[in-house]
Amino acid sequence: MASALPAAGTRDRGFTKMSKALRIAAATLAASSLAMPALAQMDAVGEGEGQVDIVAWAGYIERGETDKNFDWVTDFEAKTGCKVNVKTAATSDEMVALMNEGGFDLVTASGDASLRLIAGKTVQPVNTSLIPSWGTVDERLQSAPWHTVDGVHYGVPYQWGSNVLMYNTDVFKEAPTSWNVVFEAMDLPDGKPNAGRVQAFDGPIYIADAALFLKAHKPELGIKDPYELNEEQYKAALDLLRQQRQIVSRYWHDAFVQMDDFKNEGFVASSSWPFQVNILQSEDQPIASTIPSEGATGWADTTMMHANAAHPNCAYMWLEHSINPKLQGDLAAWFGSVPAVLAACKGNALLGDEGCATNGEGDFDKIAFWRTPVSQCASNADGCVPYYRWVSDYIAILGGR
Image 1 (spheres, rainbow, N blue to C red):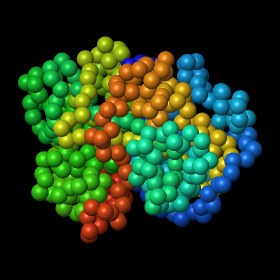
Image 2: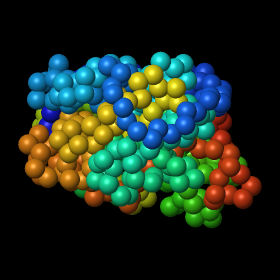
Image 3: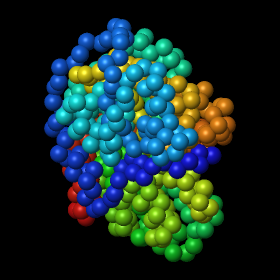
Image 4: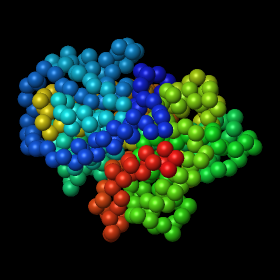
C-alpha cells in the first residue's frame, strides 16, 4: 500500500459553488486556442542549459524537502547540471493558462488539458528517439489519444489513476455496484437519505461522469464516448447533473478537504482518487473504494514540452529521467497513482509489490481517461459539444441553474 503522505495541496486546492478552477477555465478557453509558432522537432540532445522550468501538480516533483525518502530531483541535478525549478499549478486550467503565458519548458498535463495545449500549438512534438527509455513505457499509454495526434507524440506519459467511488464502510457493508448512489436521490443502506451526504467533482470534465452513467442506463441515447456528446446526449447529461445538484451539498477538488469532509462532515460517498482512499485507510478510517458496473473516468498525466522552451536540452534530459523505474515507483507511492513504467511496480521499497494493485493498476480497461471535448469528433457525424460549453454550463449547474 502507498502509505506516504504527500505535501498539502496535492492536485486541486479548495472548493466553492463556483470554484476558482472553473473561473480560470472560463477565462482561459480563448487563450488555449491561440496559435503559437511550433519549434521543429529536436533531432539531438546537446549540452544542458543549466536549468529546466516545470509546471507540475503539487507532489509530482519532489526533492526531499517534505520527506527525505522522496527525492527524485537532487540526483538529476547532480548528474546533468540542470537545476529544476517548479511552479505548482492547482488545476488543469491553471496549467493551460501558465503555459500560454510562456516562460516554462515542461508541464505535467492531464488529459483534459493536453489536447488544448496541442490544438493551441503551445507544446511541441516530442522526438521519442531522443528518450532512450521510451520503450519501457506501458504500451497502453505510448500512443494514447490525449497526447498523440495523427501519430505524432506530444509528450511522455508520467502517471495515471482512476476516479473511484469512495464510500464509508459503516454505511455500505458491501461495495456499491452503481454510481447511482451519488447521482439519484435514494435511501442508503443505513436507512438514511443520501441527500447532503454525497459529493461530486467540481470541474466541467465531470460532465463525462454523467455521460458514462447514462451510457449504461440509457442505451437509447447512443453514447459511445463520454467526451464526444451530441446535443441530445449532452442535454441528457446536464439534466442528470441538475438532478444530482439537489442531493449534492458540496463539490470537491481538494483531496485534503475531501478527506476532512469524510472524517468530520458526514459525507459517505463520492467520486475520488485512490490517493484519498489510501490515506484514509492508513488512518484507520472506515473507507473503501470501488469502480462500479458503469466503469469510471480517470486521469493520465503526460509531461509535455513548450513550443518555445528556453531549455530544451535540459527538458529532454528530464523527460528521460522522468520514466526511470525508481522515480516512477517512488512517485506512485507518494501520490497514490499508477506508474507509466510497469517495471516500477516490483522491487520498489516505498511502493511495495502490491502498491500498483492498491492504486488501481488492474482497472485500466474500465477507465475512460480525461480528454478535452472538441466539436469535431469521431462518434457523432453531426459533431459534438465543445469544451467551452461544458465550462459555462457546469458553472450554471453549480450555481443552481
